[in-house]
Image (tube, rainbow, N blue to C red):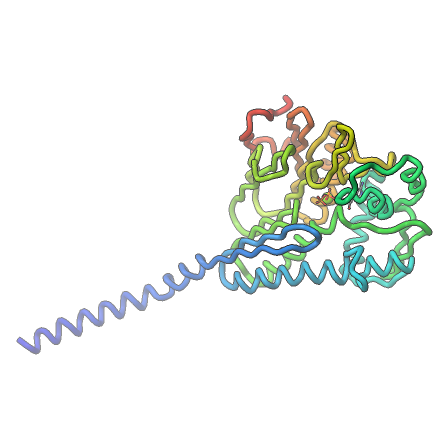
Length: 338
Ligand code: ADP
Ligand code: MG
């Protein structure tokens, strides 16, 4: 009797061991897949968030934040002493790092293709407007005095960048998208499964399958989304009047400037969202299209093979053809234009 019990117990242990043997791997995989990390920080004068799943998600989030900090402090910041752009703006000629060079070259390409709607050479004008801290607009004389300072005054030879007198670089329109490109490179190296990383108005969507992205209300810029975009991996950037502005005598003065007039763009648009497979391009184009306006902005997106959503002050939504069916409006004060 005792012997029989022992045999049964032995058999049970064996079966459990075999089942466990089969299960260990999938169970391990299951927990690995469910590993998730969320992190929030403040870089490039904006909120940065990371939501990452898969193996090494915590380390990847840390690495992404470090990379964004390095990009800001050593390359792109206009105010951090020692950064490439700070030194270049101070000295007028400087040998920049390869990272900064790549970003400058891509930005200058879009400056040209947009006919100067994007202009990374208007740093002085951006400083004059200083929309974050100003309460009254600058005078016409002040803005006129800076009209000649444009991106054409930037010349690049290998890593040596030279600025014409009066020209200062501002990469506010492209830096956050460039940060998303760095985040993508890190995700690809670390092998995480899925990541959503937002740097202000620019977002990286990394991994298989679909993602949903809310388009912020152009009135409040808050999380009251007015539409939801469903898309695959890539980059989404939005430029809007709501990001930074002040109101003076019943008029809104926001942070996206028309380099031709020297004044904030006033063309009936309140936000432009661009979807691209490059972070810097999505960011550069969202600003360019905002300045260019609906018609020319659409053309530029088509030229680059990017998709875009334009929203007008009167609540109309225009999209490029390839994105229309992926956009669902969730606020009935907005509607498709046609
Ligand atoms: P955000 O900074 O909110 O992401 P954008 O990507 O549209 O918005 O960039 C706007 C910033 O770019 C401004 O705060 C300013 O630093 C800079 N800027 C404003 N107008 C232009 C322009 N026409 N071309 C290039 N940079 C611009
Ligand atoms: Mg931009």
